[in-house]
Image (cartoon, rainbow, N blue to C red; front, side):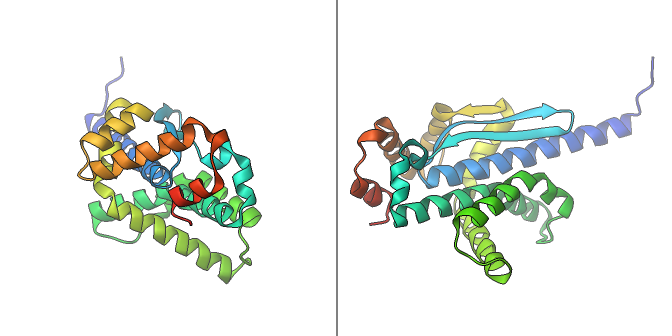
Length: 221
């Protein structure tokens, strides 16, 4: 039998719970921005691995369902920008959470390392699909997208917390659970009722969608 150092155990347990809370806010940030941009979120979840907690979100956009929409320049631009803003949502949420807890804007690099996959995806998407030159122009564009993500999450931070807290308790939330939380517990429940209704109408029969209808629905026309 091995004697357990109670202080070390408590420290490890607190670190474990803090990491879980951070990951839950990270995934909640992605989720809220995905829903704001009319994406269908089927499942958001966290799992515990040998490397700690990891999160994941199963989602798709109307552009995945009806690829012909990407032939329209304005819709393609909306699709790419929405994806980038959503991908920045995890990092933006963790930064907001850190500042709320510490009062500091100096987000530790060790925490940013947990967002490596998102950052790689953003870099790849910008390099492939956005007409900005490498260097200052691309850096400025990334800062702009991150700023939009942060602003939207700040505006909807109470809803981010609703999702994060539910995810902390249950470890996974499906579409119906997300809808129930946001349309019954949020102060913005009327907005979310409308948003889920629009998302349902978009994805119910994507093959029949009219181009102008999509533009008007997404606020592009």
